[in-house]
Amino acid sequence: MFGFGTKDLGIDLGTANTLVYIKGKGIVLREPSVVAMQTDTKSIIAVGNDAKNMIGRTPGNVVALRPMKDGVIADFDTTAAMMKHLIRNALKSKGPFSGKPYIMVCVPSGITAVEERAVIDATRQAGAKDAYTIEEPFAAAIGANLPVWEPTGSMVVDIGGGTTEVAIISLGGIVTSQSIRVAGDEMDEAIISYIRKNYNLLIGDRTAETIKMDIGSAGEPEGMDNMEIRGRDLLTGLPKTIEITPKEISAALKDTVYSIVEAVKNTLEKTPPELAADIMDRGIVLTGGGALLRNLDRVISEETKMPVLIAENPLDCVAIGTGKALDNIQLFKNKAKESR
Ligand SMILES: Nc1ncnc2c1ncn2[C@@H]1O[C@H](COP(=O)(O)OP(=O)(O)OP(=O)(O)O)[C@@H](O)[C@H]1O
Figure 1: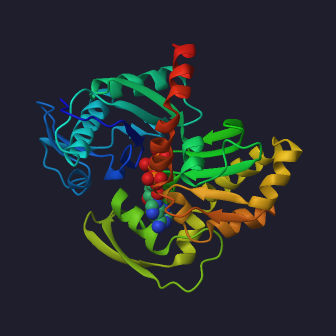
Figure 2: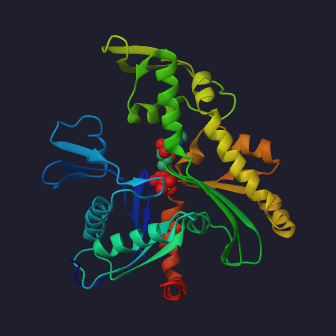
């Protein structure tokens, strides 16, 4: 599958987005983790952005689906096919290659051995010479330029589509962590359910995500206009437009935000005092797309009484960290040998 001059790859295999990093080049591909395929033959029609545009708009013989759920593989064959497609596209930009690449893939820290095995097998099936895993919060911390190898405490909260990963890191290892299957997708679901309950209006996943990004916020919203949204009236079955306020969306997101804040607090409670003091100095660092929810940094800071910062390019941190970890690939090879 690959030609001359293969470079090793880092892949952020996310519930919402998959990013590919080529060693020495950086992130070369960012696509939604969505696949569109024929229902009968299972042949793939589109992957990534093209497939995402088809969600909720496919005819009966085509399905657009997300093969990852809650940070883990929900549909093995489709995930492997999606990875194969994305790896091939990423490597195209590097010209012809020889040999298969080693691939480092990130996984949630709360993953089971069976789920981790599935990621390794899917990556091999997608064309890897061999595959290694790195825990997502560790990769996020490397990508956010935190001093992970030093004897000092760093705290990272990676809020993705399927999972929120909270971890305290020191001396190249995770000291304590918590992974909850509550993140951006759950926020979208909360918006869908709020609008269904209060307006009898059914909206799709993509509309819910747009509402979240446009007027969603943690805590009290400030300075945003109302938004017109379209959906299907559950009583008449006909299309209908309503207007919603940022305050309503903030109320819909309250429980999800609370779960994330609780995970941060629980992790802090388990943190050894010396490391807690380091974190007090440096601050809690937010990564992942969910870090972009308005005021989330402020709410976490108010609730924990700690400084909170959003990493530069939060959506890229895990991919950058996974790619940079290729520089220390021997460490991961040794770890894999021990556990296999
Ligand atoms: N401006 C924004 N405001 C709020 N949420 C956002 C914003 N931009 C992106 N998101 C959300 O971030 C999530 C995707 O983040 P990311 O790409 O880090 O997740 P992922 O790595 O695919 O998921 P996971 O780590 O759980 O497997 C989506 O739920 C998306 O809606």
